[in-house]
Structures are given as structure tokens and as C-alpha cells.
Amino acid sequence: MRNAGSDSLVRVLVSGANGHIGSCLMGGLPGTWRIAGIDTRPGNDPRVLVGDVTAMGRTGLSPADFDVAIHLAADPNEWHSFAELLEPNIIACTSFLHWCAEGGIRRLIFASSVEAFLGRLQSDGPITIDAPFRPRNIYGCAKVYAEMLCHMLHLRHGCDTLAVRLGASAPEAVDREVSSDPDYLKVRLPEAEMIEAFRRFVIEPWTGSRAVFLGAADGAYMPTRESLNSLFMK
Image 1 (cartoon, rainbow, N blue to C red):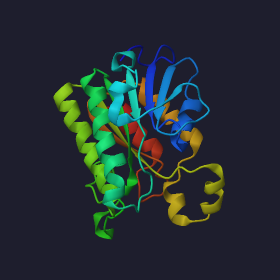
Image 2: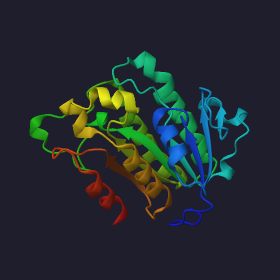
Image 3: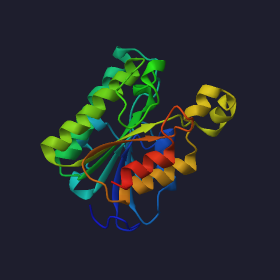
Image 4: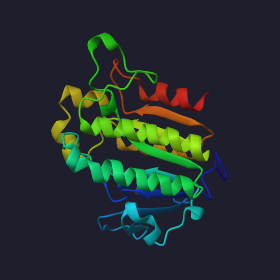
């Protein structure tokens, strides 16, 4: 990782860069970084290439040009069927992360989800960083698969991988509509907090195949500050 701990000369590739979280990161991460994005949907940011992450060899992008990849591209609907999620959340994820790891990108950050744990029983206790997976739907199962994929790529290619188990992050209009829902508030992730956390994920010195919870504010979940400390203080 070049210049870890510095906000300059960091080269980052963001998939799903025109989605809600991708747009937040593209606009909020340090302007001194060399950031490029890719998305199937067109947008207004000239740094984002319209392309297919399952065919990275056709995009003109090279993994040699990046130190870090942040994989956000996915179907975010947690209640979609296996048929609907297979291509965007499993096949595309596998293809993109393989391209990154095999091409030599040394740090891979994957957007996982607390949905991989929300099927837990009361007897399971609080969700901690070491809690067993408890997906309650196919979307959560796909996140479990991708976390295992990250671990495998770490073992096979030696790249450092981080699964960021995200809570709920929604555009402002949606956020206002559901802000009174107690279940939403348990895992709500403010945009500024999310951007700052991803900045730290990119530049701070962590290694291995790791996971972190982000956007879990209720006592039944690991709080964001505690979760970040567990990552960066080891």
C-alpha cells in the first residue's frame, strides 16, 4: 500500500460508483486522491466510467493503476430472489474481485451487510465481530459468500481484504421517511460517518483478511467506534 497513513497519492477504484454510497464516497473522499469509478449506469461524475464489472478487461482500466479497490456494485434489494441477485451480487462480485486480486491490487474493501446477521435468535446474544453468520434472506447469504470469497483471495493472492458490514444508508429523502422506524435507527449510518470510516479503511495500516461493522448504533450491535478500534488497534 503506497503512502499508508497519508491523504495523497492514493489510487482508488470504486465499483458501483454512481449508486448512493458510491456517490457519497466519490464526492467525499479526499480530493488529493486519484479516484476512478465504474458503474453500469451513467452519472455526472467524469471520473466514473460506464462499464460492466464482469468484463473489466474491456473497460481499458488496469489493476496496475490502483492500490485499493472498493467494491460496492450490487443489487441492494434485500428481499430479491436468488435469480435476481445471482448476476449482480455473486457473479459480478466474483469477477470483479478476482480481477483485482489477480491483477495485483493489494487492498480490497468489500461492502458486506448486517443482513448477514439479522436472522439471529435472541439466544445468540449481541452481534460482535466474532458472531456467527445468521442471514435471514438470500441477499444476506450472498454477502456471506462474498466475505468467504474475500478470505479465499487473501489466502490465494496475498492481498489484504476487508468486509465492511454496513448498516442502513439511504438518500436524504428516504432517510427522512424512515427515520422514525426503530429498526432502521438501530443500524442507521450517517453519510459523514461512513465517508470518514472509508477514508480510514483506505489509508490506515491494517493487514490480513478482516471484517468490521459499520453503522450499528444500538446496544445489540457492535457500535461503530468500538468496531473501528477493533480493526485499527490490532
